[in-house]
Amino acid sequence: MNEAWASWAVIGLGCVTFITRGLFLIPHTEVPIPGWLLRALKVAPLAALTAVIVPEIVMTQGHFAQTWQDARFPAVAAATLYYRWRPGVLGTMLAGLALYLPLRIFCGW
Amino acid sequence: MREVLGRPEARRGARDMMAFAPGLAAWGLVTGIAMVNSGLSTPVALLMSLLVYAGSAQLATIPLLAAGAPIGVVWATALCVNLRFVLYSAQWRVYFGHMPRWRGLALTYFAADLNLIVFQRAYPNPVPEPSQVAFFLGGALSTWLVWQCASIAGVVFAHAIPAQWGLGSAGTLAVLGLTYGLLVDRATRLAALVAAAAALLAFTAPFKMNILVAIGAAVAVGLLGAPRTRRVGDE
Image 1 (tube, rainbow over the protein chains, first blue to last red):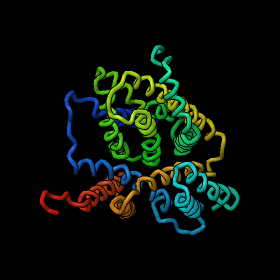
Image 2 (image 1 turned 90 degrees about the vertical axis):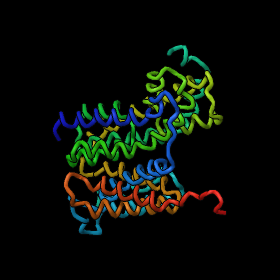
Image 3 (image 1 turned 30 degrees about the horizontal axis):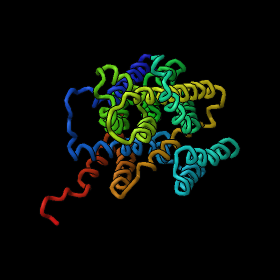
Image 4 (image 1 turned 120 degrees about the vertical axis):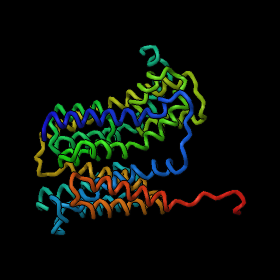
């Protein structure tokens, strides 16, 4: 990864985050949000997160994973089951890692 | 600043926020590890931690940075993940809108998801009060400190563990939990399904465009599939 390119990308990400966090503090007068936009604003984060992680889970170097002996699958299953039992980010992640790390380190999955 | 932070509300804000410190620290640690595991250098990882200071946007864009996606796709993805902040900023306006613009904007640098939840629990009525800035800053600075320490610890720690352990996957699992939390009804589940299918079907598209295709498809389905607004007299 080119260091200068990565720095620019990160600076831009900082600007994007700063602007989105403060956007409605910029105008002097109240700006009403139309209903359709409100719905789009609610769906977009979910869509972006899903679009990033689903390929991360099932693809390997640009192809669908070729084997079931992949530590990611049991990890996602464990994380999903945990989430259904106790919704929350931390426990879900730890439940997934509890299967992922041993399979990966000791079984080479 | 010192005067504001000396107020009892600042201490209360910090205390209310500290209930979430373990979760925050874990989230920061995972983000720090994921940044280094994906190949970001230590200086760039630290810059990202301090400048972006948004775990989900960072975790979502790290795989794109690692894949060398075009800078526009990286920014657009972060923008979409961050659109929830735009909704929050409308809430923050109620409390900070009367302040000089730059001061209000400076406060929103710290305005992450948890801060709004904790703030609105303390001030359920949407009216500005003088003590609010102290409460907000007390919580916001503690959050910032916990997150940055954990994130930097993650950056350092990631160098000490073998890359083949694949600990960067902790980031994916954390985002998975976050995503499950956004699936609140049929419409959101459908949108996620569409995003997942589109991201995979368009995976071979150049420049990681599959991400934008997926977001576009899911938003379109979300808009078309939303319950129609009832007109007056429909009952």
